[in-house]
Amino acid sequence: MRYANNPILTPRDLAPSQESMKIECLLNPGVFRFDGKTWLLIRVAERPEQREGEISFPLLDDANRITVMRVPSSSPELDLSDPRVISYKGSDYLTTMSHLRLMSSTDGVRFAEEPGYGPIFGSDAYESYGIEDCRVTLLEGTYYLTYTAVSANGVAVRMRSTTDWKRFTDYGLVLPPHNKDCTLFDERIGDLYYMLHRPSSPEIGGNYIWIAESRDLRHWGNHRCVARTRKGMWDSARIGAGCAPIRTGEGWLMIYHGADGDNRYCLGAMLLDAADPSKVLARSDRPIMEPAA
Image (tube, rainbow, N blue to C red; front, side, top):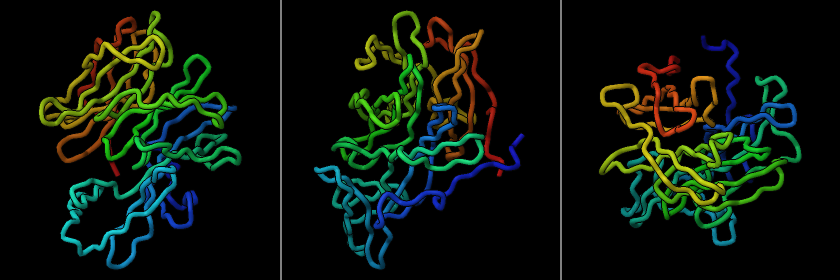
């Protein structure tokens, strides 16, 4: 049943990262418990205020400062056919740049930013178009952030870790483009760490959920496809892992998102084998959550 007091956060609940920017939307938070509270690590998408006669969008420069690129809207070299991507002189840019913002709550309903916990921005050329859609896993006493790093080089998976949410270790890109929807399992299986991820290949294959393993959290291999899209069903166009899989007495419960050809997103569930999570034991035929409003 839908919660009647659904605590929706809007751009009005946060201040832009700088005066020249406007928050367009809040998206896809990672969720975790820390210091006795529930926290959201929210993706905040921003862009400059738009002026008459031009299209403008943000970028990180070589010094990791946010700069604004401005293009006359009448330029014949400008292609705005995709609402999320600007094509200009043969190069693609995002209409917005995203960063991550921490908000906490004592009751799981009312969330607010907490002093002392700053925003998390892109840090180099591989994140020059922003960072997006973070998953958070508490593993062996450390929080691991796996998120999407976007740049002119493509969409890749990057990882950072922290114990206090103020100091971070950067692991760099752990999976190259094109990849996203990465989440870590919250414990080792045997002596191996595992992650779910989604390489994308629309020309041959599709947007499927894969699994990888590692002995050190830095080098990942033995990649195997776990689940594919299903023609004619609610998850026919793309699927991707959500939060960290949950260990149960029957195996690993994975909540995943799926979309059909009309980009209608729903949530489903899979049950993965406890000892070998590359094996799917069960998968929901119908969504466990779907849009209704």
